[in-house]
Image (cartoon, rainbow, N blue to C red; front, side, top):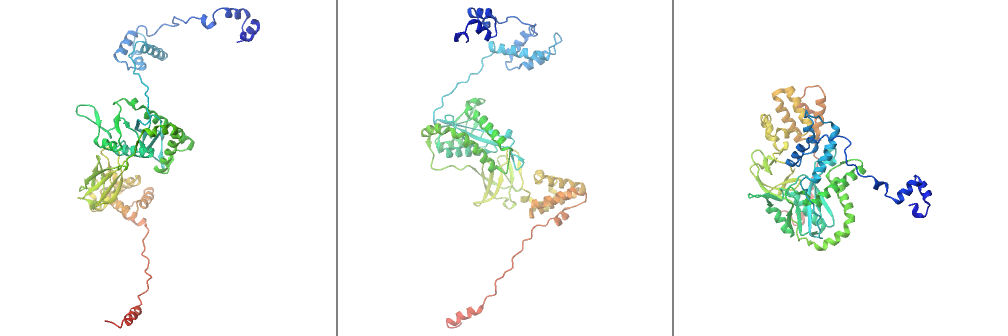
Length: 480
């Protein structure tokens, strides 16, 4: 650089920190980096030279073996113990072998996205974000809908990968968008697909019915090939990272209820979509118009209420009022709740259970019969569901310690008191009695609970004035 500006060689050499002779040699000959040949020899013996044929045979037999696994297998050999510092040497050698002699790796092919052609959707778990609702952990999923061409995205909170959650999320997304793409791709969700006897999977009839209503063709990636749904998978990662950053700015992860948390997520989605409006406007004209009607987001089941005052929906059981025993009720299954209807009227709304083999029993539905048959409590199959809070569980244990076999009777009476008055009034009284060392029973709890007494207001209407009636009779000529 100095010589290029016309500086004399001696001055340029001095400014570069070298002698004039060295500068003259570099000017006429190769540079220092060109003079040094790469080292072709080892500075220390190869500890794996004798073991390499065996290591190579293992890699050929099982290409997925990790260097750590092979190292731990070899280090116990008596012929030459290995040290921890040699693990890195083995890792480098195995890496070079895989790059030169190993099996071919799977190649990814970048795809061309055409405007309005298709959308991708999937569920992603949000548990890693540590969200709480009113102090309680909120284990939930997020239904994510993405347009690969414009990267426009939306979604909704859900509790499971159910058919109802899939359809509710899809419909909410396309109605928010105002148009529908030609193709909708998911992975092989059990909510949308099922196994075939001859092998493979195909789409459920009910899922096809929904997409046919919107004029959309269903599509799914190859089982085990999640990268084929790569746009929405990448969107999961970026969206959750944006939520994490917003939570850090917010300072805490607790929300009063699900509604403000949903608003919080909607604000993040709106911010991410703000810069995508130009490409979205390119995409919208290539999409179909929405149908005139939106389908219902629930499935309908007609279920008989059994003699246990329960209904079975989706491999789980739920209790209903005992007066419905023997009747057939209509159950509307929503993504997060069940609505029980009888004779056209809603008689109960129950939170939907996740998984299988679960039970949601409300003691208020059973308490009338349970008080008359308290002995059934001891061996009741769903006894654990009759402890509405930890305090009630502790109260039952304390009653068992004090009253023995009569504890079932006393506890059932406590549940009856909670059903007749208020659970939130009985619980603090139980807490105080549990903290004391006195012996107590249900009668003492009843004496301490003082629910508000509903008083009937006095009737202040004066007695009727019959003289007005007499005057009317006189006006028409007297009594007839």
